[in-house]
Length: 221
Image 1 (cartoon, rainbow, N blue to C red):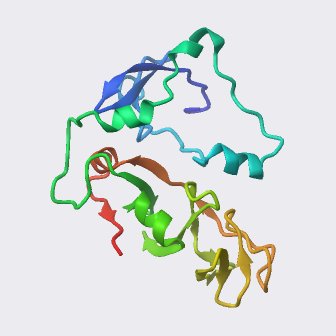
Image 2 (cartoon, rainbow, N blue to C red; image 1 turned 90 degrees about the vertical axis):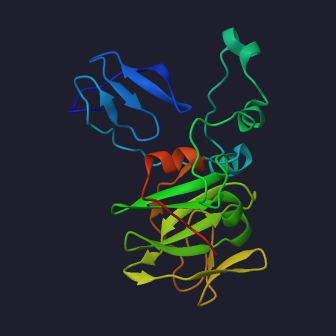
């Protein structure tokens, strides 16, 4: 929706392995990663991002047992590629940023808060969660799911007070011993029933995130 008008998007092209969309109503071209209209009547406008999760199917099914799954189109069933991601990993990139300590196709989790952006290497988050950090003046907490693959990020405050989370064996606990889950909610302890506010993250290749966030920092620990 832009100015109360529903736009219909179609694939228009590829730019640095990031697709471009063209809306049928105005003919404007939009960048996938930023949601920004690059040229056309709506040039400069930015689509409002929607909170979303990138989870394994097992994790999603556990949380949403009544959820529906988009079925493959039978017409194109034979064209779906099961090995798409491994093959894409082998492709050369048009741009690279040597000296950053990350390879072009390292997967990062990008977070933007109050004009500041930071990239969190996925492998680091999966190995070290919970990670507590500050981005744009906000306390941020990154958690990995029980599947060991899914990741979510939250603002690390409840009712104005900062919450510090730790791993105790396979449990996620706060300083008072209260238990927390992957949804960012306290399931036991003094804060039971309270939930952290979820923050949008963009799972992306480093070269793509860096290209569209030139001032990004990298989480290192």
